[in-house]
Every structure is written in C-alpha cells, then in structure tokens.
Image (cartoon, rainbow, N blue to C red; front, side, top):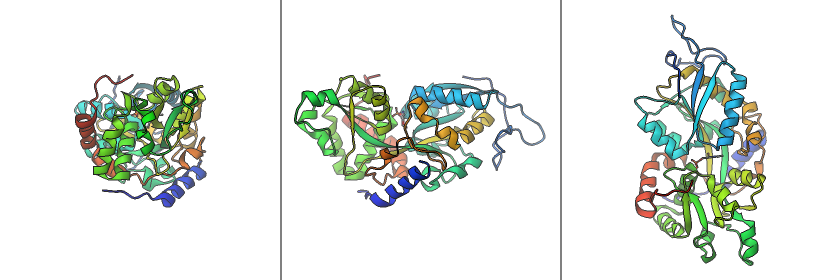
Length: 369
Ligand code: PLP
C-alpha cells in the first residue's frame, strides 16, 4: 500500500485555502432537529419547550492555553453558558469516549487530528449535526465528514524541531530534512516524539511513514527510527518544549507547535522532511448522547465562524483556519511538500496500527509528561 504524493493538486488546494483565508447540570433537550436551528435558537422543538442549557462539557485536545482562551471567548459570546473543559490528548480522548459510551459526560470534542474522529464515528460515538456554518468551510471535501459527524476546525503540518544550541555544540551536524535523516548516528538517543497511543500528533507521524513507504518498508523504518528515540511523551506538542529545554536534540511535532514554542523563546530550528510530510485536519464533533446538545450545537456553529478561527494566535495557536474569510497567521507552514494523507485509511486502521506499535515497537509505559 504505497500512497502517492499528490504534491501539486493538494498543495494548490491547501494554498487556496490558506490564501482564501489565509462536569454537569443537565436539562434534557430534544433530539437534534433534521435541519439546524438558527444560531441563537434553543434546541427546543416540538410541543414542549426545553430550557436552554447553561453548561457545556468540552473535551479539549489542543494545548491548554488555547482551550482556556476558547472557553473564555465562547462564554463572552454566550454569557448564559459556562464551559467546563478537560484537556486530553487524542488517543486518551478516544479511550475516554469509548468508556463513557453508555453514560457520556462530554457534550462536544474540539481539536486533535480527525483520524481519531473518523475512528470515533465508526464506533458510533459522534452525533451528526448539520450546522448552517458548515457552509463556511473553504474545502468541505477535505474538512467535512460526508454525514456531518465531524468538521475540520484547523489544518497543520508535521515538522522537525531541532535545538539550536545543540547544533552549535555539534558543528557539521545539520537539522533533519528527510525522514531518513532521523536514522543518522548523530541523532541516536536524541529524538523525542509522543506515543501514538495517547497522541494524535504521533499517530499522524506514524501513518505518514506508512503511507510514504508502504506497510512493510514503513514498519521496518519505524522499528529503526524507534531505536533513535530517547523517550516518548504523552502529549504531542510536549517534545517541542523538551527539545527547547535541551533534553533532546530533535522533536517530531506539528509545525505550529514548534512555532508556538519558539515564540515563547525556545531556541528551535524548524525543518520539514523534503520527500513529504503529513498534516492534520483538526476535528470537532458532538458526542452521541450529549446532555447539553443545544449548547454543543452553539459551540459547533461558533467554532466555524471566521472571527472564531482568527482567535488562535492570541492563545499561542498558529494552525491555518478551515473557513473562508479567516486569515492564516502562518500560511508558510502549509507551503511545504504535503503527502496526500488518507484520513479515511488512517482513521479506519488507527486501533490496529497503534496496537501493533505498542506491542511490537514500544509500549506506552512511563510516558514523559
Ligand atoms: N495541541 C495542538 C496545538 C495541536 O494542534 C494538536 C493537534 O491537533 C494537538 C495538541 C494534539 O495533541 P496530541 O498529539 O497530544 O493528541
């Protein structure tokens, strides 16, 4: 299964996108209407009017600064709703949603690569919602589930973060510019990346390699590359901070998280694998059985507004937006060689690929926090 790199078509589509833009007090509500209610409406329908929810339980996968910022911004836009959020990495979120399937505690899941949303939809964990603001999506083929189980809220590419001080101390060593460079002797025991069981970032890297190289060669490469890894982290963005602190030389992280760490003063050099890098569409989906369905729909609508998607940089988030009319803060992060990432394949095979990695390559014990 070697997947081709659709360099120019996909890149052009993403560039167009970048350029165009560039726990709970429940009041039961009615099931979702076939058509979305107008923004600002309650979800009440039929003969009895259910009271509007005053709480929203958010499962938030991006970095905590952005989760806190989005909570505050949503509460400003909807002063009648209090947002309670828990920050959890993608794989942990999926596990939590599976465990709570019969008694869901969260209303909406926002952020993290859609591979996990594709997997969640297949397991019946998401409630489709035909939001009127899905019409704002600049590239719905890429950023919207055909059945409206999830929608994309941001896009970001994978990169390598190398510590500049370490480079200065090791003259002649260049930052990695291909996946093969990670196997060089100078990087032995110098690489940090999250574990794919907890992290969507790490899973994106794993599935990128399998698509670039095919399954057999890909798993051989992953085995070799795992031999270079100093330590696995729980969260996908954490290696950027640890590499910045000099705990390892190179981190494999989403490029926007490398930019965020550099903006805070970490001495990091950002490079990309020239033969192609993976990318994410950050997802959002309402949880099946959500106790505050009306409030979840309000969040869903709000997160697809251009003004909402332009809030990221205020909260150290530099992903590209998915909706027309929102400007990308760092369009150059998508102006790289992106592979034709197959979200359906990566989502459908997530459990099997992560289990194989955990059983055959590296277990998920003692992940660095
Ligand atoms: N934080 C940010 C800013 C992200 O863009 C993403 C990816 O969507 C994540 C976190 C994902 O976190 P993790 O890799 O821990 O699942």
